[in-house]
Image (tube, rainbow, N blue to C red; front, side, top):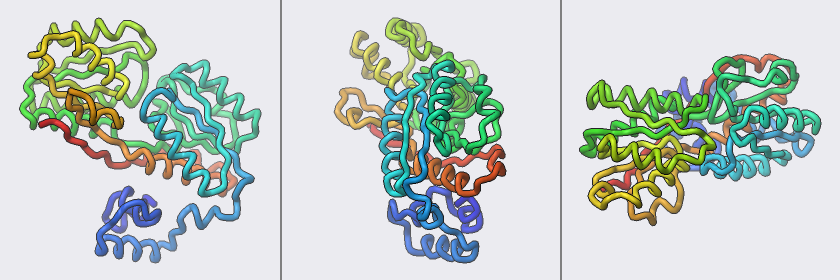
Length: 324
C-alpha cells in the first residue's frame, strides 16, 4: 500500500479508501490509484489471504482499554478480523510493563500466529519479543529500539497542528496536559506542542503538566496548573485527561471557564453535548486497525523472518473544530 501511495502521489489513507471502499474518492484520484495498482500488480490482503481463513489466531495487547482510542480500536480490529475469518484474543496491559510481559507469555502459550501490540513502556521491550519466531506489528505506540512495523500517526506533527489551531483561534498562552510515564506517543505530542508554541507564541511559554498514568491526584494538580498559569488554551494528550480537565474547570470561576479553549486527542460522542466546546485531533482508528491487521496477516503469509525491519506507517489526522 505504501508503494502504491508513493507512486500515485497520494496519501496511504487515500489508497486505503480506494482499495477498501471506505470513503468517497474523486474519480480522477481514484483512476490514478487504480492505474498504479495495476502497474505494481498490487493485491489487497483480502484477496491475497482469502485462503488462510479461520486457521489464523491473532493476539492483541492494548495499552489501556479504558481509553477511547483503544475502545474504538477493539471494534476496528474485530470488524476486519471478521472479514478475514481470523480469530482474535484481546489482552489489556493497563499500561503496566510486567502485565504486558505476562500477556505476551499467555498469548504465546495459546500458539497465536502473530501479535498486534501497543507497548506499555517505550524504554523497556520484553526480552521474550527478541526470541519469538512469530511476526509482531506495533500500533499507536512504539519501543525506543525495535525492528518491527509501527502503525499509527505522526504524533509530533499532529500535536503541532492542534496547537497551531488554538493560536489561530486567538489563544495567547496554551498549556499541555500529559503523562510523566515513558509513553512515546505522549513524548512526541509534547515535543510537537513545544515546537508550535516556540513558532507562534513565545519560546518561554511552553508549560506542561506531567501526571502519573494511573495516579489519583490529577484533579487538584490540573486545577492549580490552570490557576497558576492563567491559560486561555489547553491541549490534552488523551481524551481521559480531557475529562479530568473538565472536572477541574467545573470548580473554577465562570470567567476562567469561558476563557479557556480546549483541544484533545481522540473524539468521543459525548463531546458534542458538553457545555465546553471540545475540539479534537481525530485519529483514523479504523484505518489504523485495518492496516495493522492486514500487514500482520501479510507477514504471517510470508512464513519467514524478513519482517524484522523497523518501519513506520503513518496515517493523517483531522481536526474537528468545535470552537466558536
